[in-house]
Image 1 (cartoon, rainbow, N blue to C red):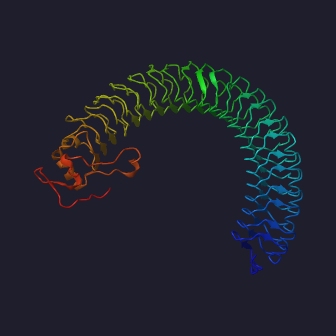
Image 2 (image 1 turned 90 degrees about the horizontal axis):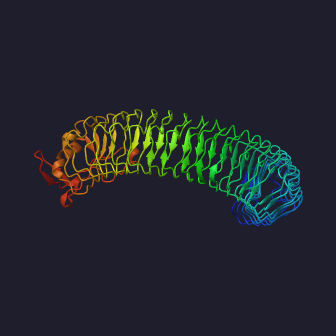
Image 3 (image 1 turned 45 degrees about the vertical axis):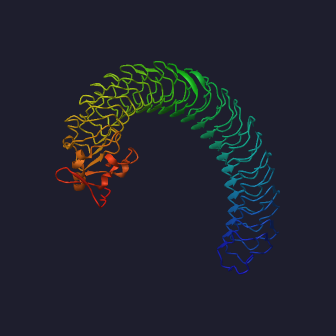
Length: 614
């Protein structure tokens, strides 16, 4: 130990040396020292009287040493100490009275040691302790009285241990405890009354254990509890009365278990519950009416990734405050009329990855507040007229990856608030006049990866606000016009071989056009008189080389700066911009080395001309 530490030192840092022993009276001259850091040494011995003189010490760091035991009165003389960090040692034994005289200690860390049991009076003398962290040891036994004397303790970390059972006397003497972390243990047994005296507990974490059932009165005495985490156990049964007395509970997590059914009355006694997570279980068949009848305060319900096959009328009755309902990844094939009845506040509904084949006019009855509806990947082939008729507030509708082959003028009836419609990756081959007539506020329309072959000025009647339609990967070969609000037009990877005069008439706001991956060989400047300048233009590689002599006007406008090949950075994430404004010319001639004279004749420039990125 250095012998030249100034007596006036307030902070002493001796970390990562080769200190092995703390001798008696080593720090007797450091009466003003408030912080002592001995982290990362080789300390295995602390002699009696080692801390003599450190009357002002507030923080002592002994982590990452090789201490194997803490003896009685090991920290004698540290009456002002508030923080003691002993994590990452080899401690397996903590003798009774080890923390005697640490009357002011508030934070104690024993994480990542080799402690195997917590014995009576182990923490005696720590009446001011506010945080006790013992996670990631080898604790398998917690004996009654282990926490006696910790009347002020609000937080206890016992996660990542080997505890298999909780005795009803384990947590006696902890009247102030608010946060209890028991996750990542082997707990399979919790005896009645285990938590009976934890009147102040607010957060209980029991996830990642081996609990198999939830029995009546299991959580008796936890009237202040607000969060209970039981996810990722082996729970297959939740018996009525399991949650009785949890009158303050707001969040309940029971996901990633093996629960097979939900019975009416299962959630009795939870008047304050706002979030219920039941995802990734084995809940199957039909959800019975009244299952959630007592959850009057529920706002978020997670039922995704189960095996629910049918939604009956009244399934969600009593959930007038529910805002978020996730049912994706089930086996739902039938949604009966009235299934969503009384969900007056629901704003988000997720039904993707199910087996719904058709939507009827009464499917979404009662969802007048719905704003977000995801029906993607659900095998939908038929949407009856008026299926969305009552969804006055809906602004986002996702129907991608279904089996729709046609649209219809009544399909989107009633969706006067819709702003985003995703119909990508269906089998739509024809867009008819009037199909989108009801969607006056629509801004984003995705029709990519369909089988659309022809478009004309009547196809998008009523779409006055659409700015960025997605039409890539179709079979389009005809004209395109009629969207007065359009700003970006992406037609890449279709089968367009030519444009008729007036194909883009009326598109006066378009400033970005992508034509990559089509069958074009020529392009007339007359098509682009209505487009805004500067115009970001994508020509790129076609299915056959360009007749580059038809693109002289592009080269001139590129030089003038009215046509450019580089987009604004914010669009890079949406489009494939590689090869933009670089048409593939015959014989592999580099577009950037071509020059065009006033008569439209080409020659190869000796100097490669670079144009600035805009």
